Image (cartoon, rainbow, N blue to C red; front, side):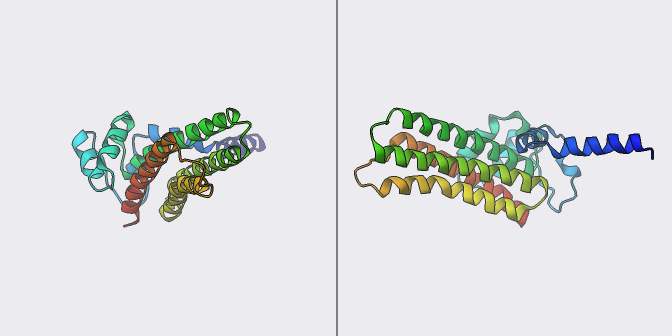
Length: 201
């Protein structure tokens, strides 16, 4: 092989290595043949709502699972791993939006030192949740399902850490909006954990 060809191949390898985790998510969602990957579990949603409903029935939040997957057309051609990727993507979106929301709340509470401290801590927790979910995508792409399970579990726990930050200050009421966001992310993560658990069986 000539030096020029070797250099081209090296450049290609470097480009591939620079793909972000979000790019990885898009690639996984667009893939039409997850079944070609050499892993033990060949469980599929075969292109109809009934099969997705059957999978969702095995999770702790059946209705949330079905409605979330129906909102993404890729779910109709995805296997269990692909469905987990979709749920994790939904969780990442929620965590990012919540962190942004909390940061905006900090700007409107500039004179309340305690509130700003709690809001900052909560914004950080949701950022950490997003980071953990990003890591789980890489784990899934590497077939490291046990690590993916650990990362999604961590993401699920971060919202409760935010709630605990409010509890440390009895004068601060936990906002209903935050309770709603916490519940949603916890449910999404739990659904993803149920799917990853099937890959570990």
